[in-house]
Length: 160
Image 1 (cartoon, rainbow, N blue to C red):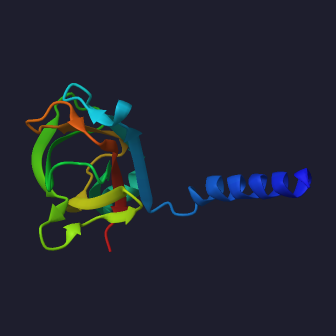
Image 2: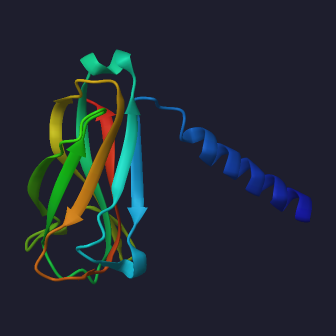
């Protein structure tokens, strides 16, 4: 009885690990928010590597956000910063991201009381240099800490 269960668990684990490598056209990394309370001083950093061949490719950059149904706002203000490989300067931009409307409710996909949003913030972006890019995500809402945020991240995929 234990062997079939173990075999199923090992098979599922291998499938989950291998599925991360099936598509080289997508990169996504999420960072857990400690205690589901996003302090303005906590600025998650996400890094990804770009190969020389991909510098001619257009990419779409998404902000990924997961929150509970108890989140109190229809939007979130984010400051996103990116540092290019070999560069000490950082380019930043503020985003007012809509998470819900009065008509439709939460716009992201949901399961039970957890909602996930993948919001396009930089369409058709060209990364000019190969190497490691560093994204920093900061919440700039008036409430500090911002409660009921589970994790935040960046998704980069080849533009279609």
